[in-house]
Image (cartoon, rainbow, N blue to C red; front, side):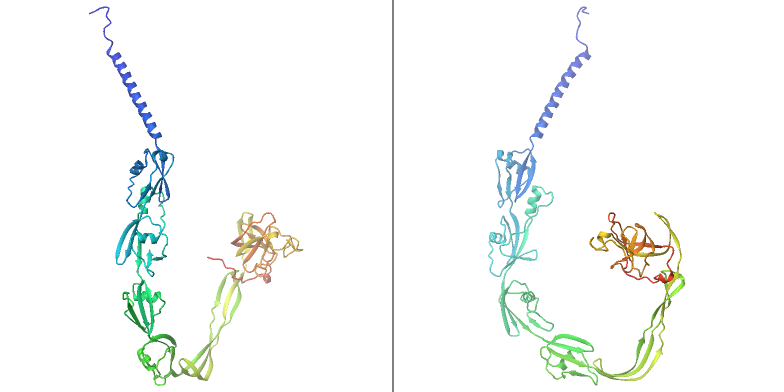
Length: 502
């Protein structure tokens, strides 16, 4: 042992200094990384793109327009165009302007041409395809004919679409069809008509020219035949005639020659006394009216109903506003034997023979209740006692809305001479007697103290003070409070108007 030499430091002390050194290095790396991350984050900036006039913003670290396009995965074709700003212009907000060519599928002359073009109208697009258009040719898009020189359909940017989605939408194909004008001649019963058409079939061409076809007309070639250059279409017309037979009138067309042949064609047979106007050997002409006259005699008993009367009767066993049928009633019958001579279903003459009353009519009896039952109802104003409940349409008014100017001598005066105020209710006196005490839920107690030109039947008008008008237009149960008026003043059978909708 070397006494007086302290020797090496303890192991624990050496490890403490090494750990401290490593910690400082790690902290330095972490701080440096944070600084780099902060610098990287701060280096992001917004660039502006305009793709076919639509502005799109993009956050990026790229500094050049080419790097932005690469980052977005945008690849331009030869038919596209771009205006790329310099780096300093891009940083200053100058947009990257792209014009993406639209894709067109053009069907023409039995073939399909595909092209990409930046044309904005039909003429430029067709010219870009190297296709010639002539005077009677037509251009169609989605079943609609387009005018020459019309603009191509506008593109609408999909909601929240990015640059690639917008470019994909722009490049969606537009399907255009060129229909070539073809010369066609129509020989309509010796009358020639020549025109140029884009119709695909004979029937379409006739329809476009407003040439009608009728049942029985013969068209050669047929209406479903394809239109070809120089085609001549012959129309052999049928004759329009009108046939009246057995109570029915038929407007038809036919190619037969006579009235008799027409009846034979339609399987119309004549009985012994039947005849036609004109006669069967008459030749058919355009617009001829042929009538088949059916002739017969008939004996029968004619019965004429005798209507029954309807009577209302009060029933003291039924509660008021209840009804029932006491007797349904039945018609009577008056009978007469008649001999009638008919032509074509129309009576020519008749002979009236024996007549008698076969059955006497019986009145229909409708019963209405005249029994009054007093009931009670708990309301927000306490318990009320009522003798009748009526479903009514309620409206409301006050003096200013009653229709009279303030200068009028009866302004604000009700039917019974009182000032208009809350608690007065306008009624139809034929339904509710004047001065009848009432209760209306939502309005409260009141009495029948007014009338009105529009207050008819099951209607009431709730009066308010000038300052507290509440507008009403609803159906409500109206309670007529006891005591009930004299029976002579009660309308037992109430009108049905107005009616509440279900």
